[in-house]
Image 1 (cartoon, rainbow, N blue to C red):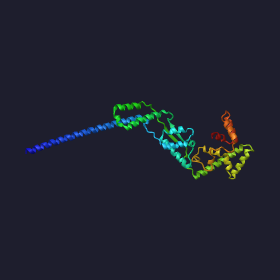
Image 2: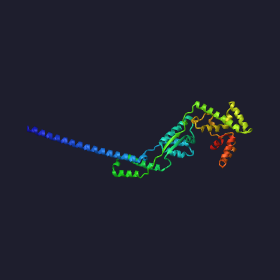
Image 3: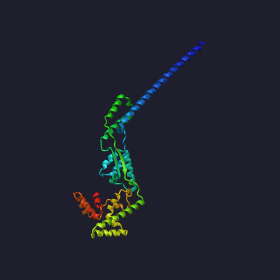
Length: 320
């Protein structure tokens, strides 16, 4: 009987020891877990504080290099092209938008637009742009951000955390530029057969109106006789002479009118007149116009030129 009592007491003592051991292990694990949660919470709070303090200076600006290169090729050496590219480099959104518009335009017309055409119809609206100091602050902020990404645990060190916050605090408060994109209505649309027919119809209507108005103000003889023949031929459905005469000016006026019909591209039979020198104006008179436009008689010279060659002729020639 005494033996079994001794065994029972020994087992009870062992069981009590094991229970105390398990309890100590449980408490240790609980303490370790609480310590880890505290460390994680502390680190997350500090990471958030650093990120909030960095603001835009820590945000990523990564543009698609291939798309930017395509836009650069399209711009060529057009005046203002470098500034256009610099604005794009500050906005991944703008790069993607301009590139898509460029590709859509190329698809709809079958040709890559010129640099000037691109800049005239895909304009950039930049806010807070022009102060180059923002880039230096941005690069400094990104450097801090990248260091934190590599070793965020270091933020648990009070001295290191204080130094990082001090480094950020020393950065000037600058605002990163925002770049919007404004695309001319209809510029990326596809030219349809119906639009081609309507372009030609509007072109010819404007052409005959321009010619008849000029005939009324041109003295008889000389050019007036040539103009009369071209109008007669036009009305007999032989339109080439009149188109060659006034096509460049009339087409330019239609394109500048602000409508969307001519934005997607030009009908094949009127496209050759774009940006051409009007055939009916002697080169010597064009030279005289350009010379006179740079004198104090500019308004008088332009008025006389338009009286002789049609309203808008001087503005068209000077704008080429």
